[in-house]
Length: 116
Image 1 (cartoon, rainbow, N blue to C red):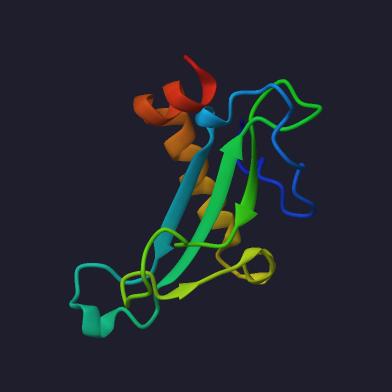
Image 2: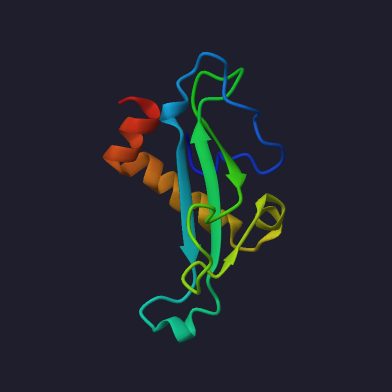
């Protein structure tokens, strides 16, 4: 997946029948001020996407999902954006750049999602 190839309009649909759902990845990204105590995390905002197989595509695809679902609410996550809010957020492009970087450069994530 190249830079910014996440689906910003409609998600690509459910995983393809017969595709291995164990190769999904869920990426949460927290943007905001770092290096300060949690009393200064009021600008934190969380985005998330699911990356994995989808019907009608040979390669995995990314789609926005609600952020931080596997974690309790806390100042660390800040405002956990759902898909609709993320689509409207001014930092969406930053999120796609970070998630693309992880997919391209983290060997564990890349191997899990792409099998290589």
